[in-house]
Length: 155
Image (cartoon, helix red, strand yellow):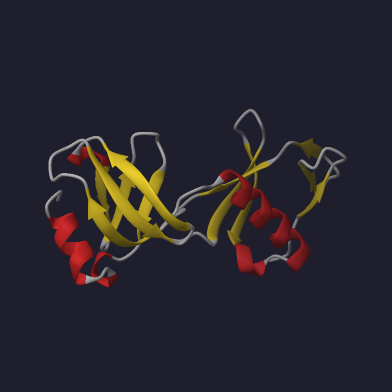
């Protein structure tokens, strides 16, 4: 399927979308349809007022420069550290402080309640800390035994 738009940055560093008919749209925001299950598929290019202007079925099908612009924009907006290991928890009652190892380094998060741990399809967990940061456990079975044992107390 041919690409029917062009993406560039304006002088302020914001995304500009030029459609096939020549219409120009500034301050475009890429939005993933399935950020966890299929992050490279289903990307909407949305105007600042929330209207979808273009759709990308698969990010990898775009030319490298346009793919790079979208990935750069998504990276600047998305922050979801992936937990690789749970080192310790302060208490098995909530609120509790967790010491975790993530793909972005070691950190601590505060779990307000068990309801802040959401199960997603497969063995994926999404954990919201007291500051609203979303932490991802992509595959529960890939955690080490100690981490699973600690997590089981909250599930």
